[in-house]
Image (cartoon, rainbow over all chains, first blue to last red; front, side, top):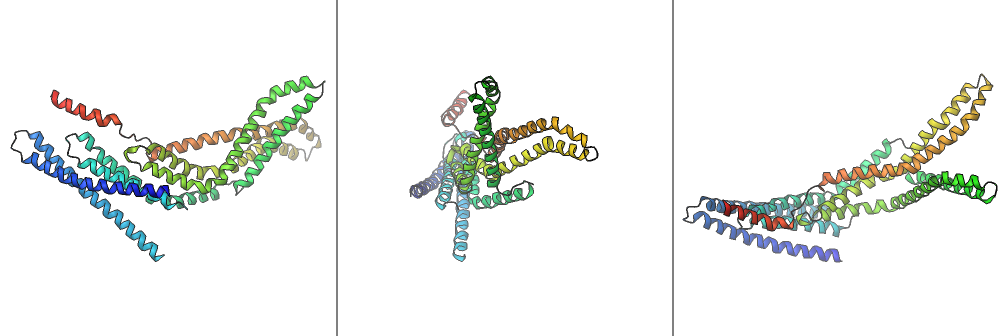
Length: 84
Length: 293
């Protein structure tokens, strides 16, 4: 079925994007730490580093919450389907 | 029943949009305008996921509202097929009688000028009656398969809604709104037309005749008033038929389209997505602004 093949392709792309997101989280955290800890007199750069770290942490937390909710819904649906 | 593969596609698109939003928010770039698309994508994905999860609920809700309206509206026919049969037979009779009248008069040489005058008067009515007949036949054919395809149309709308970066948001919300409005409002169209025709025809044509007959019970001479009343009643009946069967469908379609547009804007068709230039120009402006400071 073409729809199922498309769904599988999208799911694979989502997996790749989620892996890239995790890698980007690490990169953004390191870049943020670097900017915050660098011995430079520019306050804007340090604030940008703090913003990078904050956004990375927030997005990773939201990703894990979303994954947990979707998994929970899938588990409830499978339990209901097996009970019916 | 909706195909599970379509729901699966909508779900996977919503998850993809969510993780794209996560990725955009995590990008270690100094331009906040690009990172700001992350929360927007995530919010859209959550909305699309809720729309995907509630397809079954919408199906039950729409059927419930449809049944509720069917029981509440005092329509003369419970099924639209009976009303549709009466409408099509009336319009066919009107169409063919006008055509036969003009054709018969045109056949005789003496009455040819009368036929010419009549055809110039009745020509537009004949045209519009034929158009209305075609419209009602289209409505009948749509009503035949609408009950089976509306949920597929709705699910397709959810799929378009779930496409990342709001690429199909307007089309998706329009499809969702149109399918809901059509499945609720279209089955009532024939019954409402018959109800309108009955009310208009009774009050303008039948009731005056009933009044004259009631008044003439004591005085039979008052029955003579029926003679001038009869052409007026026939003309009023014609007016009620034309109003309810020829003009009403177009007015009803206008109302349906207005309701569908309002519902589509409520579902988010007004929300504009990010343009390609916003990914290129906005960082350039921000960078330029930093340098000019």
